[in-house]
Image (tube, rainbow over all chains, first blue to last red; front, side, top):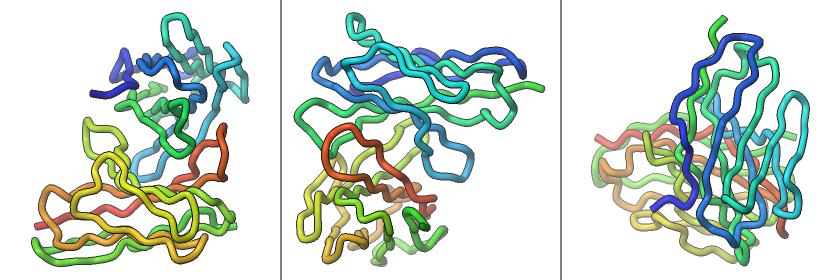
Length: 113
Length: 113
C-alpha cells in the first residue's frame, strides 16, 4: 500500500484565509520530504522541501512542518489566493534510496473568491 | 534553460501499437525517472536511471522499456500498447545525491483504444 497518504482529499477555503494540507507517512527511515503543486494539465511543481533534521521550514507564503514522532507532514499556505488552487502532493525519499520518491495521492485545494 | 521537455503532449494509440515517449533535460542532471499518473493512484515510478548507461525498474515497469545513452535523453518505449497503459506520463530529473527534488516535465497524455 501507499507509504505516504493524506488526511483530506479535498480542501475548500476562502481567498485570504490560511490553508493547511496534511500528510501522513509510514516509513520512519525517510529523511527528506517535498511538497509539490500540480495545476490542471501541468506537471508537478516543487514548492518546498524539508530534511528530517528539521521540524519547520518557511518559504514565501508557505511553511512546512515535520513531526517525526507521529510521522506527520503539513503544508501551510498563508493568505491563500485563487492561483493556489491545485492538487498538492507530499513525497518522501526513503532512507537508503537516492532515486526514489514515494508520492501520496494528493489533496485538491479550491480557493473561493 | 528549457528544463525537462516531453514530446508528444498528446497521443492516441491502437491496442498493440508501439511508440516512444521522448524526454530531454538540459540541466545536466544525473538522475532521470518516468512516472505515470492515474486518477486516485498518485504518481507511480515506472523506470529510473542514475546516469548514462544505467537504468532500473520502478514499481510498475511491465510493458515499458527505457534506455539512457546520453545524460540528456531518457526515452520511454511502449512495446505493445494496452488500454491499461492509458495514463498521463511524466518524466523528471534531478541532481545526484540526497536532498534534491525532481523537476518534472509537462507530461504526455496517452490514450490506448
